[in-house]
Length: 215
Figure 1: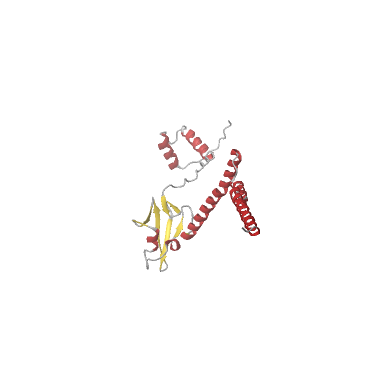
Figure 2: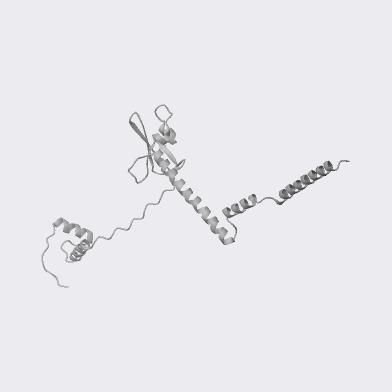
């Protein structure tokens, strides 16, 4: 590799610091090697930053009816235009050093009859948006309804497929068979009606015969 002979001037204090680092005298030719390595390190590209893994969903938190508040969730309520805050720590809601409930937070000040769902605002970890607790409950309720609705729609389809595999009649076919049986007259009832007609006819014949042939 060709070498360019061009002087580079270094401050005296820098040479003295280099000498203390390498253990060589400041004017020693051996310091040239350390200077070259330092320049090469400076020219190397910076290593790529390691890919960050997405943060795991915390398991700790406070279960408020249908709404789960993960650890780190902030709660806010206000009274007289003054806001006060609490935070979920572990499995508790902490206001200062005290563990409280959402209802207690909503009624720390005032008359004590406020609905916590309509008075408490929530800010979940990683979000800058405050949401009314009632809004979070409605969204969670809608998600549960959709989930249960999908399960109910799938159940009849699975039952129909199972009946086709086993050869068993489905519910609608069984219902049609029962309806046809209910519409069909019973044999015993028909027989009783026929016997009644014959007996009545015999009595009329006997009465007519007695009238025409008096003793």
